[in-house]
Image (cartoon, rainbow, N blue to C red):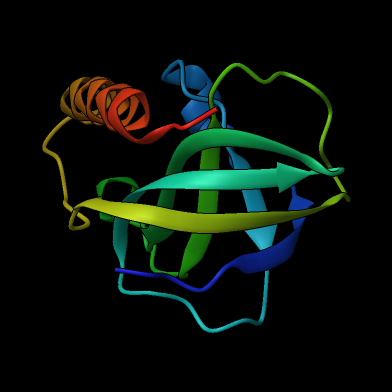
Length: 126
C-alpha cells in the first residue's frame, strides 16, 4: 500500500521514548494522517533519507488522548527541534495498543524494531 508523506515541525515531547531507549521526534502537522498504528517509515531530514519506526496515535499506555505523530529514527542522534521533517509510512506493522506496563511497551518496541530491520533488509535497494 502507498501512504502519503507527512511533513511537520519537530516539537518537544514528553521524552518517554528516550526513557525507554527509543528517542522519538514528535512532529506538529495539520496534514491528513493514515490510520492509527505503528509503521516502518522513511524519514527525510535536510535532503537525507533515514529509516525509522513511526507511531501515529494517542499513546493509550500513557493515558493520553491527543493524536500525535512521532518517529524513532534508526542510526540518528542529531538535534531536530524546530526543523521540518518528512515521514513516509512504508509498511504497517501493527495497530495501536494499550500495554499493562511500560516494560511490556518497551518489549513491543524492541519487537517493532526487529520487524523494521528485517523489512529494511528485504526491501532496501541502496
